[in-house]
Length: 95
Picture 1 (cartoon, rainbow, N blue to C red):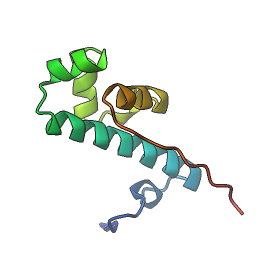
Picture 2 (cartoon, helix red, strand yellow; picture 1 turned 90 degrees about the vertical axis):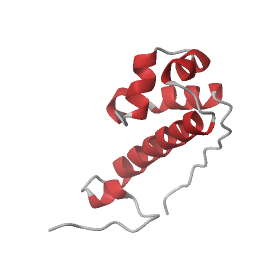
Picture 3 (cartoon, rainbow, N blue to C red; picture 1 turned 60 degrees about the vertical axis):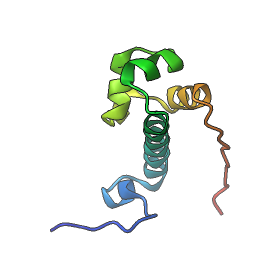
């Protein structure tokens, strides 16, 4: 049976990940999507993006293809910073 996930919902929860794992995976996916959007908005080739980000073209290819297991959150935050993407991390304590 196919399950449809509504926009704004965490896909990883629907896939059966625990709530904390789903939050981490969603955060990583959001960072990757924002970096891909930056590459597209700037109309960069993978080689140009790699040069600006200080990584290899192969790393940019992994990013564009969504190979999320190859990127730590730390690396994605570093790349976002190099791309000039501003971000804030908000911590919320569970009740």
